[in-house]
Amino acid sequence: MNRTLRAVLAAALLAASHAQAQLAIEITGGGGNQIPIAIAQFAGEPQLQPGISDVVEADLARSGRFKTLYAPSQNPALNDASNVDLAAWRSRNADALVVGGIYPAAGGRYEVRFRLYDVPKQVSLGGLSYTISREQARATAHRIADFIYEKLTGDKGVFSTRIAYVEKRGAQYRLMVADADGENAQAMLTSNEPIMSPAWSPDGSRLAYVSFQQKKPIIYVQRLSDTRQPTPAVNFRGSNSAPAWSPDGRSLAVALSRDGGTQLFLVGADGSGARRLTSSGGIDTEPVFSPDGQSIYFTSDRGGSPQIYRVSAGGGDVQRITFSGDYNVSPRVSPDGKTLAYVSRSGGRFQVAAMDLGTRQTQVLTDGSRDESPSFAPNGKMILYATDAGGRGVLAATSSDGRVKQRLSMPAADVREPAWGPYSPN
Amino acid sequence: MKKILLAAAWAAFAVTLLAGCQSTPDAEKPADVEDRTPGDKPPTTTVKPIPPSGPTGTAITDPSKDPRLKDPANILSKRSIYFDFDSDAIKAEFVPLVEAHAAFLRQYKTAKMLIQGNADDRGSREYNLGLGQRRADAVKKRLVLLGATESQIESVSLGEEKPVCTQQTEECWARNRRADILYGGEF
Image (cartoon, rainbow over all chains, first blue to last red; front, side):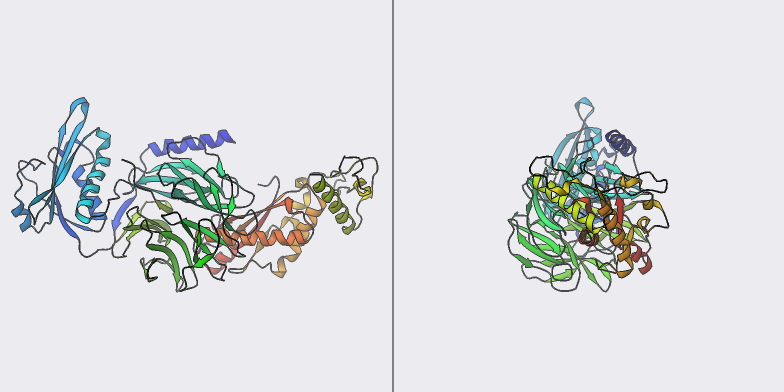
């Protein structure tokens, strides 16, 4: 048994090492107040693949907060030390300009330097230098995009983060981890049985998920660096599902049926010391911690229809949060704790909605009919979700105000259950 | 532990009586559930159910070998119970099926059963897992009411993850709102 599983896992890693079709990104909406930015091709750019300025430009465009302008090539190419004619860039309506260069360094490495200008103010907003290996070109471009995004919007960039999702290809299920732009997708686990509900540990080192490998739902916790078949973390009699990490990464809120029904419990990340959190005659599931760790939001149909409720992380009294409509599920709290994203059914359509937890005002963010599994970017500005395109599952993202949308699709696979990972440690 | 064994012995005795005295006392062979502690032994521990006979006349002691489970003409080969939308009520047409499986579990105290509940694929995967669990629990509860032992049955959910039908039609959704019965050796 174990040997078979190990073989399956080894095959999965092998498959992942052969480059698979990547997620292709398609921006399907537009937004107002975009910052016009020109990103000149870096001097010496062809030395590295992919082209760093290309990746930076794609990142910024995908965020929906920038309008990328055509930057004509110049001779000699602009670099980070060039004396830039900012007045000329002003006449092209650029508010910001990025220039940079790539220089050979010792030991076959490269130095990548860039500088960001505020064009109307005609000042430099700073720049950075990185000494990298050839393989780090893409990651470095994401770091540069993060720097630019933060300088110009005031919000931290998420271009260096990762996402997890489940892919179904034929009869095979794969738990995938990819860069936030869908590149570098790798299978963490391959199984002939379904996989669902991946959840990132707060430090990004582990994923908790539900596998049906043993003919029933069992929760596993797997290190991203671990290639061995993981052992079950939460495996009580009955069903074990819906893992959610506490902000300190020490415990999991989970849904268990071990005492009958589906109820919420708090367990150690290794499955130890289960403590019951809710007691209702209904289904209590989909727990998620508030960022301060004090409360847990969850789905319950204790009132007849599934709605979102809140309970203290220590258990106790339960407060109902959603009231409009007869189907509100899958709560997710924004990283600042102020917004609740969830899935709401209206007129037979399932869409992602957001509630301001201060004013309780709600807004529908997406326009699909089978939108599921919302997941906030760690800066709270985007929400990744699963939707349906021609009967096939695809991933999509919306800005948290609903104005910019994009779709990530992978040919020939059914993609679902996205989870946006935390900021990667520097 | 001793108490559990005693209780199990009494339950076995009671079930044997209820089952219409299919058993005969056998003083020489101790029952499966015997409590070996002297003094604690109630007289009923000498009651031993006799396994039923298969078509060949050989005594069957392994429940998974009972041919009725695979005989299309026997109700025990029917393993699926279908539910209405958002409901875990066992409809009248499935009551005979549940009763037959309860009798089987009463007959074979060593038989283990896994009930897998399912849901159609509309809405949240985790909430649908809860709906499937509710259906599996409903079948388990009915089996226990009909004399099966709680520890024989594990009720779990597959939610919307293992559909038998994938079209977006009411007929297809109805086929996925289902609980399936599996016996030890089948899962």
